[in-house]
Image (cartoon, rainbow, N blue to C red; front, side):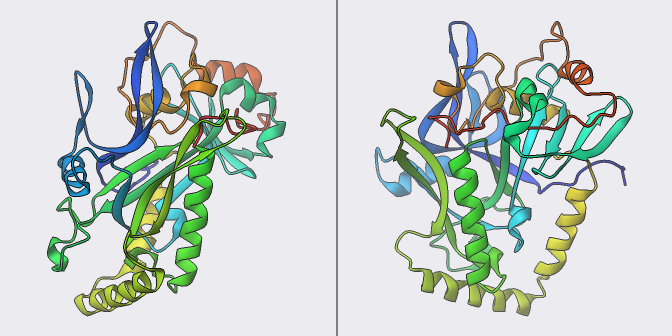
Length: 334
């Protein structure tokens, strides 16, 4: 097995609440007020829609916006389903450079990957200069909520495949993290068995000038109560045990897979992530929000790589702390 390679959940598609548009000759992320489900393939007009996008829209009625997606989670451990970190990417190459949790970080340096302190985001000069910010990935299975046969329940046809939702939105990260822990506690650590729903919510703040901003939440499915969801989870656990499905072993394998590498994103994925979530020239106040879509453009190799800038910024002992560039959530951030 290759060493230093993080083994992440297999991805069959993406869940987005935004897209990349061209404004004044620049490619900038733009927020949206509904979900879009795409494949991992890009065409001339952006990401190709997944068949499930049309199916779910049709189920909602003509002209309705896609603001709820029936899902199940892959793992019982909340931190395996949602990985949130303070992150820095090299904008020129898409290479992950530093990932921290507010206490410690793993940073790519010329001498290799080092473990260093990562204090609170508000007090780090290095993070402010390099565009460090919260960044999260959520993996879910999209399911057919009306299917009676377990074999037909997974709408994608792949029970271990997942759709990934990426965000730098503070509201989405906080809501999803809290919900996952609440549902884990209520279900007796059977989080993966719960029938749930990704839901798009809106809110207004003084920072958004009273305009609505959108973020992602996780709830019981529309038309179902929490008690019904818990009963459904109990039945699902019994069915899995009868079939020999070992959820604890799956969680353990996932934990070891994530730990096998220093960074979750590859260079190829990082290029898309940079354009979607870490645009160098975008006005973050007006263009951030939930950037769930994007088209990879070739890195600008004419610019100095961020890794070289980091090397000049870091002190001799390599212990310059990391902070987020979003000390206060932006108005359009979800």
